[in-house]
Image: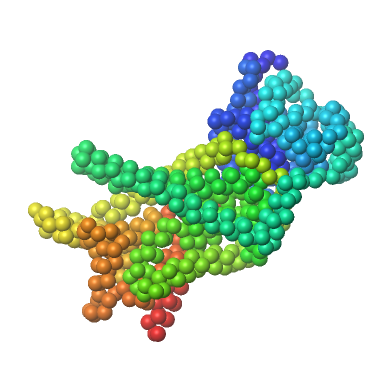
Length: 632
């Protein structure tokens, strides 16, 4: 074999929690990419490394327990191994097995070996062998399987160089399967193999793991600890990301001012500053929340606690058509639906993952908070404002679970749902793995959803910056030479009203009038589709606010003076305010979320269904609240 001129395609295959990802990270380092398998939304990781002149292209196939697929992830892995025409079919398979769960791991290993594909058995977490199988005969195990075996502790990097050496020197010899005719008796074969290799002892969790699980998986204490941990996680994601998000916002704002002062006033300059650059800001500002959320998720996965989280939540979430792994996206949705939906990738079952993606935006995210704060301060008495905010967050949770029940009955199951997960021993996290995971998720978001967000931002800017005919010219002529700040804000409001977006607001006014809304709210509903908090800025522009006070207070004071048409009664009364609060609690008002749902589901079908479902519920609920409150 000429190592200096050969390129080798290698696949990593193994059970979930076998340490496959840690091994991939150690072998490839930063030389890795992320995408989707062709025609499917399951995540694909591939990378490369060089050893002794040999270039190895390594693909990390989704974790699976069997080549008989029961989920989208397992189907991808199965096709790559079984179909020799598949573009990801490997020349060599690294079968990653958990040394502490040999009996379970060998079932998949036998299936792969039966395909007579050249393979290496990577016995990961080998540091546990002394405790679990002190008499294990590695040579006997290798001889029976007819594949080389390399012991590794991937998290620490132990055995990685030896594995690279075996890969480089391996002659791509297909294993000779003496038990090929006994495929239906794999469990019997595994028992015999382990017996011959002196590894029959039952698997016992580490003493520390057993003691921790007595509390952390307890139906009462475990749930209490879990709720406390989630509360701390949410608060940290929300508070820790505030400062970097403010920095990002300030950077884009200062850069916009610099662009405006440095570039000539032209269509391209305004397009760049108010459309493209603003759209980029809408993408980048999510990065801190994504990074911190996946920091916590990665830490929970690295320590082994995430498996316990899923175990605890699975029992009661199944009543709603969800499963244990759905709990993290749902809780993450309280901070931001965008990274929360990305977190749903951990759910293997296609239907349950889809249901989780579809209902997560019902959770009241932090972007709704400025809207809630403005409207609650406007129409709710001071003594009830805190309770009103709490009610809106609880309302989002109830809506998410209710929607899950409905969708569970509407969406057919493509396979029988199974929740199968090994509970690994607790381990200290390896921060390099955590950092690589954060980099992957942030890069993935910016490169996929970011393109859609910027594109829609440009269209929103064009719609708000131009109007038909001579309307804009007439308004500009009317205010020519006027420098009064209040008048200039009034001009901006008139320009917005006569823009294509403003005209659209007037057009939809008859449709939203039953909810108590006028064309101004219609504009806010349209512009806040870019992001929910845009509602406040839109109100500021519409009501020509330009004082030194904070924007929210100024908007509220101006809105308090707004009167109903042909009446001295305030427009923003309790029925109006409650109707608008309910609308924003239920409505899909964020293009970022829709963009990510499209990316994660692979088509526009589901985000459009989601948009119609949430907007329809928001309309009906707001209509009911407004009209009932008027009768009281």
